[in-house]
View (tube, rainbow, N blue to C red):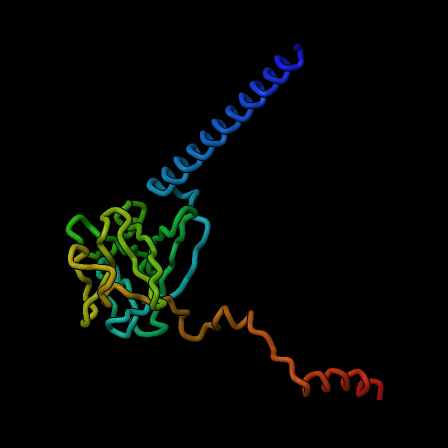
Length: 210
């Protein structure tokens, strides 16, 4: 008769341990989600882990985004000094800041949806979120004004964010390496091995001995 109560007590303790472990894991998950959301909404200098330099090719104009100072357009030539962009990528999400390497101004979007260049890019108006599209293009939506995209018309002039949607070609861009710089993918290309290359490899040691 004493076996049943001991088993019952053991089962109760076991379930209590499982319950507390489950509560602890849920709390940890909630805290981690809050940490990510907090750092995504309020990024700081410590969040910036990656800096890249490339060009943004505009699907509409066939040229590149360039920052001339306060003015921004999509009429830059391939390899032009004002078309070289320093892109600061933050740790959480695809939040980026885009700065002109020559002008040292950031692309920003004000409350009216107007695209302007500013020397200080720490405000949320200068943060954009990358959206990767199925057609291999990239769209950049404002992190502060939801649904407002960086876009340019056929003349290369900026479009107001309130008049843009993701489906418009005016907001589609493609990342490109500056003219004259090697493609980073070149380092990862493999040599095709054929019967001729195998034969050449076998003959190389013999030719050295002779």
